[in-house]
Structures are given as C-alpha cells and as structure tokens.
Amino acid sequence: MLNVWSRTDQDFRKCRTCIAGNLQQFDPAAQRWTAQAEPSSIFMAAKLAAMRNWVVSKLDVKGAFLNAPLPPDELILVQPPAQWVAWGIVEQGVVWKLNRAVYGLRQSPKWWSDERDRKLKQLRWTHDGDEFYLEQNEADTQ
Image (tube, rainbow, N blue to C red):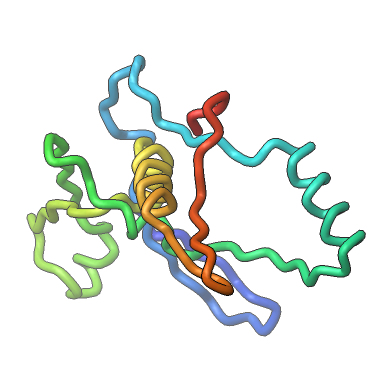
C-alpha cells in the first residue's frame, strides 16, 4: 500500500492510501478491465435529453470498487504503508487480508463491473402499474 499526498488551494494536505498494483503478480491472460460507455451513446443520450428538456447530471462514485466482493478463489494480502508503522497507527509486520476490491488492484475494475452488472440485472421498479427492468444488449456483454 502507498500513501499519496496532495495539496489543496488553501494549502491543506490530503493523504490517500491505495494498493500498489504494479507490484502485484498477475495472470497476463486474465481480464482486468471494464468496458465504458461508447462516446456515440453518450452523445445520443445528451441530444435526446436536450430535445426533451430532461435534466442531466453526472456522478463520480467514490469508493465504488469497495462495493465489489473479491471472488471466493482470490486471496490478496497487503501490508499497510511504512509511514503508518512509523506513526504508530499499526505495528510492524501487520498483514491485512482483503475482502473487497480496492483502488489500485489490477482486477478491481473487472470485479466492480461484474458486481455492477449483477445488481443492475436484479433492478426492478414499477410506475403507473407497469414494471420496468434493465436488459443487457446481446451484442455487448459489457
């Protein structure tokens, strides 16, 4: 794990801790990415929203990877940052077993994608007596 430091406009310092996935052993054949929205689809949705006077917004989900559990066959152990030991937050030699995907792991985007898709397929709602659900396009499995 690494600490990443930054400064704000007001000269406050922020510290974020993330996994150093570049040190992780991995299977080169394993899928570690997730598909993203096709730009033409985003443009079409924005155009349709403008034509119908819909309100549009965007959301960047912080900590989204934490919603994805690790697959049962995965064992990932990490050491806290050395700075945490120096500060006395954790003792020397501590190792953590991860239960969820975290930022920095190479597989986290894939695990998040799998969890997101699973939840979206379960989503159901009713409006004016009609039931609605989401269905994945057969041409794009992502």
